[in-house]
Image 1 (cartoon, rainbow, N blue to C red):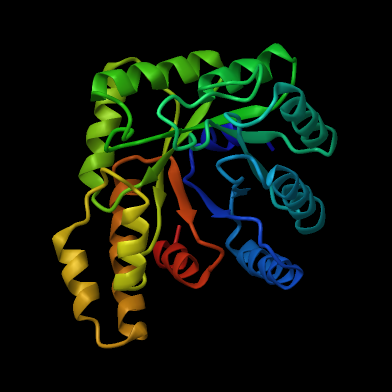
Image 2 (cartoon, rainbow, N blue to C red; image 1 turned 180 degrees about the vertical axis):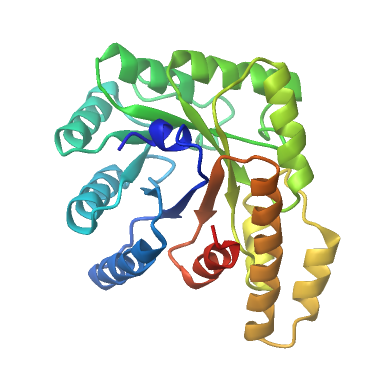
Length: 287
């Protein structure tokens, strides 16, 4: 199933994101987790790739296995900055040959040097990867990432939207946002995107925060994203893990309900390979 077709169906699409485990035990545990989520009828699941492409093959292996063995549409994340085009093409062709119809085209993280350089003959931007996929005649649906609170490297919201339009013009067909914890950021971003002529589905990415430490860690990895004071305070005052989990699930449930009421095309859950919180949020929505 092509993911853009899911979003065109008129019903909210729920999806879950995972990363490739490092061990065989972790791999088997993840497959059990995804199998348990199947009863919630997710539109698709996605599997991340290391920002420098180091898990490219493991990502491909896992999405192929999920789709073949569990019958759930699976999307592979593909990062491009540190990949030679020949290696990328080999992976993309393999995915398509194995029945995978969807990829999320990402730049990946630059190295720490002041002037990061791509792999020889490679790409600096996700828009270049999207254009490459189209130029090679691959019949893959392409998704892209976006940042409701602005990409941390973009000098302005206007420049960020210009780059996003470039990615869509190159072939991306839907967008999944970086996580956010205040819906006003998504709603304002969607308005700005519409004013800029962007019509692709913009899917909110949500992660239930299940502890104060979880919140601190995740937001450290999300430069420029706002941490609502009420959530920070509530998690900081939680008496135990169980209470913190309830706080995180309730907050994310309210977020998702508000987003869907405002017309969001679905919700993409960032799970960190742990499903209980995301599963409970999805069950609470009763859609």
